[in-house]
Image (cartoon, rainbow, N blue to C red; front, side):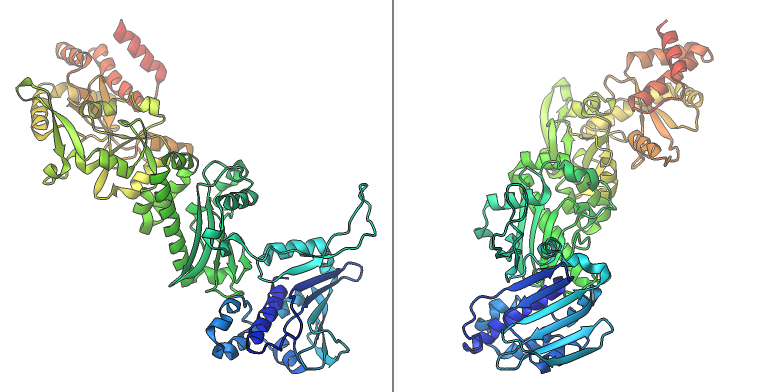
Length: 634
């Protein structure tokens, strides 16, 4: 149906071009249409067009010559026609390969083509499925072409009017010519057919919203169409209505949803499903859900892309290796990214709702689309510890360009602003990092010991509670010249250089004083799980924490991998003990008095296990841990 309707459309468009040169060509014909007729009793499907017709010579030349297209020949012959006479009609010609007629033999065992050209006698061409044919004179007097398909046994369904209407609306809904069929039989209130006369009705829409100029389409038009398309009763976040006529020629009408659509979200998480836009060429549907148009991470974007730079007979295999499709996809991705960036800036509340529903899909891009990963990163949001809301990475950088630190000289507490430019001689300064911390929930994160020093110095931390966030960070590693750094890493130290030097001096002194105790803790806990045991001044209220090396997976990541039956190799961590905590001081004094008692060993294990629990990781024996706590309390 797609091929034969396209052929009929081309016949009409050719007649318009011919009439532009010779006004007498059409005689008194003014109405043009493609008419489809069905006969369910005899299993016959008929296609009629009422404009360009063929002579006996034309039928022999074009109908049974493989890959010779009447449209293509016509295009070559018409190159001399004045541009202003053919420009609009020219773009409506579809076929170029001459194989559309052959497709009818997929459903028909016999095909009759009856036609009468202008000032020529009518001819009847009859062909059987064996591919032999005869051409005879016809008594036809009407000036149009009629093709009758005598359907084979397996294809009788195509004699059904409802089936044909569905096919036309699916594949040829936007062919720029009316496609007419007899309206359904009228019924009375009891549902019984009446003798009321039926009329021809148009079954195709002819013009899609995408072919109209944006100024001619209202927001209500977009909304109504989007809702009819997706069954989503909400407004879309944005509409990408783009006409491009430059290196690439294409038209798009794409919708980016805002709210969750339960009808679709049930399946969107399955990457094997196909949700991509439909691909049209010359108003004809070529491929539904064309995954070559957009990457899988944009699978929530819906509807249609049209280009005239492809042929009608392109296959999915050809598309997969097409340089044109690669360029087209890159252009569409760029348009979507521009749309998201614009919405994030101008409609932050709407964008936040979109991000809550689709942000996880967005974040997939960063790992897979290397060329666009920084542009993609501009669109994703994370929760800010300081601002108490979701912000972008650019927002984080803007808010943390000037970092407040306390200047404790002469015991005065004056706020001093230190711009990142003042630290340009060193890479290890707070302004050169994007600090983050993966966790299970925002509430638990805000009480985490890992952010105690960040609160002290007013340095922001991005609290990452989405399981995919750590993948995002590992995929980016840095953003606009600033490295990502986990707040749980062992070498995180804030404050100015003078304060850091003072703290380092104090820690070195205490480490020398209690080095035996630190070695005892490491040996007691098991050296195979601890890289080192150190003292620190960065903690405020916590007794001890376990910290990681750079890019070492967090406890949350290990849990995720374990839940997926992909256990990660155990990585040694460092146990940091708060040098100023009263309990830690008491433990170190106790160890000096008795280095071998069971209570000292219990203290060492308690230090480690409570730190592991603060990391939200699991300890091996919870019962034994409780016994140790009770003994220490006693």
